[in-house]
Length: 140
Image (tube, rainbow, N blue to C red; front, top):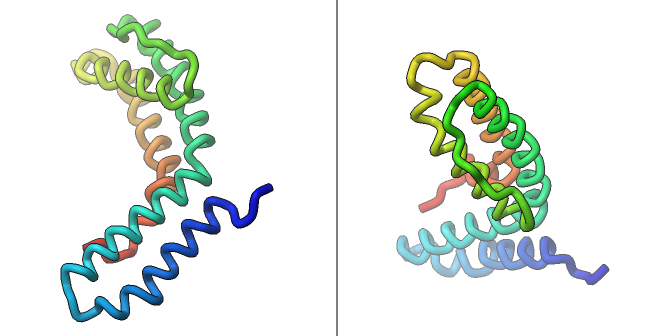
């Protein structure tokens, strides 16, 4: 394994910005805001390096049967490509779900609506691994 890791490098850059650069710029509101924004981006990139592959795989694994169930219930689920790059597949699967939402909300599919809501809650929890670092910090 190559040392330091990508995560270690990002953490070191963020730490240097916080402990060495931020104090120098503390009196400048604009510079301080920019540094907080950069710090937030570095936190997101670090989280994505660590968790994105698993989050996308889990999301795809949940979306496939959800979309199949919606289609089996007679909802108009568009055709989607689910092959190759998992991130591209995830975009296709999410796009298919988004296109199906108006029909899910027509009032005649309560069970399917409940399934979609459960998926959305699970997806939000899952994505906390990617974006949770943004909570509890002053961004601007």
